[in-house]
Amino acid sequence: MNIATMIILAFLLFCLFLGIQAKKGKEMNMEQWAVGGRGFGYMFVFILMAGEGYSTFTMLGASGWAYSKGVPAYYVLSYTALAFAIGYWLLPPIWRYAKEHNIVSQPDFFTYKYKSKSLGVLTAVVGIIAMIPYIIIQFKGLGIIVSETSYGTISPTLSIIIGMICITIYVMISGIHGSAWTAVIKDILVFFIIAFLGIYLPYHYYGGLQPMFEAVSAAKPDFLTFSESGLSISWFISTVLLSVLGLYMWPHSLVPVFSAKNEKTFKKNAIMMPAYTLMLLFVFFVGFAAILKVPGLVGAEGDLALLRISVQTFSPWFVGLIGAAGLLSALVLSSILLMTTSTILANNIYKLFDPGASSVKVGKIAKLCVPLVSLLCLYFTLGNSNSLTVLFLSGFSIVTQLFPAFFASLFKKNPFTTQGAFVGITLGVSVVLYTTITQQTMGTLFPHMPQVMKDLNIGVLALVINMISMSIVSAVPPKHSSLVGQESKEEAI
Image 1 (cartoon, rainbow, N blue to C red):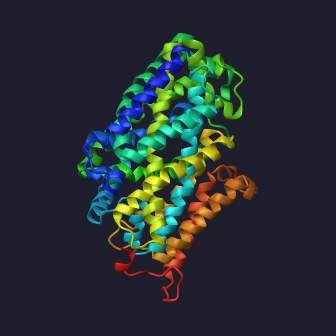
Image 2: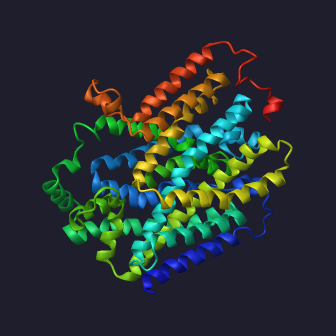
Image 3: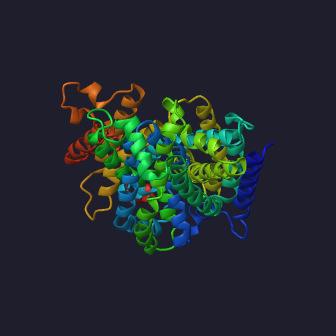
C-alpha cells in the first residue's frame, strides 16, 4: 500500500469517526436528524451551503469541462455567484415560513403553501428523480478520485462501495450533524488544495496565467471563445438562467436553510458566498493547464484532467491529500443528498400509506431508507457512463420546473392555483425527461429556427411550457370534482 492510499484511508476513517461523534449528546428525533433542531449558526450554514459549491462535480466536472469545452465551463461560476446573491432576498421568507410550520423538507413547503397533499407528493417524486443523478455524480466522482490518486491500488468499484458504506453509517447515526462536522474538515482541505493547484500548475508548466492562456489559444483558438453554434452565447445565458432559478429548488439546498438558527444567517451568507465562489476560477485554471500537458482525454475522460495532471506533477503524499480532498467532497454532499432523499421518502411518501405514523416512527423509516437509496444509486452508478456535467445539467433542468410554483407561493396573493401548479410541474418535468431520454435539443426539435434559438438550453422550452400551462389552468375556476382539488388546511397538515 502506497503513501497516497494510506492518507486517503486515514481521512476516510477520520470522517467516519467525526460523523458518528456528531451524534454525541443529542436525541436524534426527526427534526434533530434532518435539520439539526434548527439550531445551526452562521458558520455551519455557510459550510453546508459551500458544500454544494465544492463537490466532486466541482473538482472533476468543472475542470473537465474547462479541459474539454473551454470557456463554456464558466457557466458554473456565473450561476453560483448570482444564485447566492439572490438568496439575500429569497431565503429569509422561506426560513420564517418553515420555522412557523415546523417544515423539514421541500415537499412539506409545497404541501402547506398550496394546502395540497397531492402537490406535496408530486414535488417529492420530482425531487427524488432529480437527486438520484446527483448522488450518482458523487459516487462516480468518488470512485474516479480514489482510484486515480491511489495509483490504482483501490479500484473505482471498491472505492464507491467503501465510500457508500461509510456515508450510510454516519448518516443513519448522526444525520445532518455528521454532514456538518465532516464539511468543516472538507472545506478547509479543499480550499487550500484547489487554490494551490490553480496557482502552482499554470506557473510550473507555463510560467504564469497569461502565458498559459496564450499557449492554449495558440494550440486551440476556439477554446477561449464561444462558438457560433452549439455551446454558444445563447446556450450560456439560458443555462445560467436555468441554473440560477434551479439552485434552491434542489431539495437538499433547502436543508441548510431549514437548519438555520435565524434569518440573519442568510444575509451574511449572501454577502460572503459570491466571493467564496471565485475559488472556482482556480478549478478552471487547472483544467486549462491540463489541455496541453495531459492531451488525449476524450469525452467523459475529460473528468480525469485534474487528477491526471496532479499525478504526473506531484509526489505521492501530496496526491494523497488531493485524493482526500476529493473524497471528503463526495462524502459531504452525498450524505446531505442521501439524508434529504430518505427524509422525503419517509415524510412525504411513506406517510401516504400510514397517515397516523408518529414522528418517531417516521424518523426510523427515514433512517432505514438511507441504505436502500444508497444501494439503488450504487446500481445506477456502476452501470452509467455519462460525463459528470451531463448528469448534473439533466438534474438541474428537472428541479428548475419547481421554481415558478415555489416562487409564486411566496407572494401574499399567489397567482397560481394548486391545479395549475400540478399541471405546470408535471408537463415541465415530462418535457425534460422526454428530451433527455431521446437526446433531443432545441435544434433537433425546431431545425428551422434561428441558430440563437436552436442553441438555447432545452430546459427553457420545458420552463415555458410549464409556465404557460400553469397560467392557463390557474385561470380556469376549479371544480370540486378535480383530481387535484384544493384540500382543506387541516387535511393538508
